[in-house]
Image: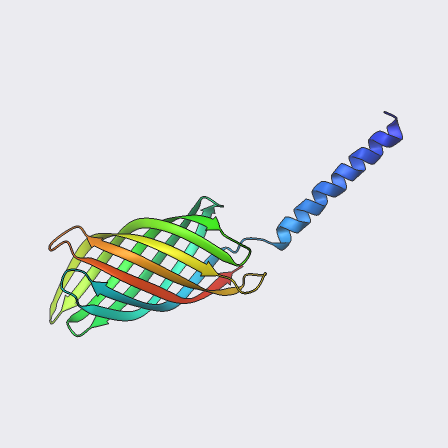
Length: 171
């Protein structure tokens, strides 16, 4: 191999790697994703239903392997108010350029207030998260997240719920 062909190969390789580096920076992962939505829950123990707003922040510490979601949801019913605060550990899968799916599990702190009495409890939550990004840039989207909650103390409350709303990518 001559010096000129070696230089041409080196130059071509350098251009190829620089092109890949610039292509990756154009599709940079967001620092976080805000989830703003509404939640509905149905108790499997007493049959009561509740609903309210939902707010969560999601970050990706290990791309394609782990996403962390921390959220808070106040649920209102005729019987009282329940504040759910959770931390979910999720495994993401990219189904297409516009659809992502995640399965997650994690702890949940539940503060329930009936009449003048407040009760704190530890629970576990399992959730499936479907994220839909209508544009290629993934700045805004929407999500749907069905979940199952199981309390670890008192009556071992169990509930099924669903949350849905707007996704906002934070650069």
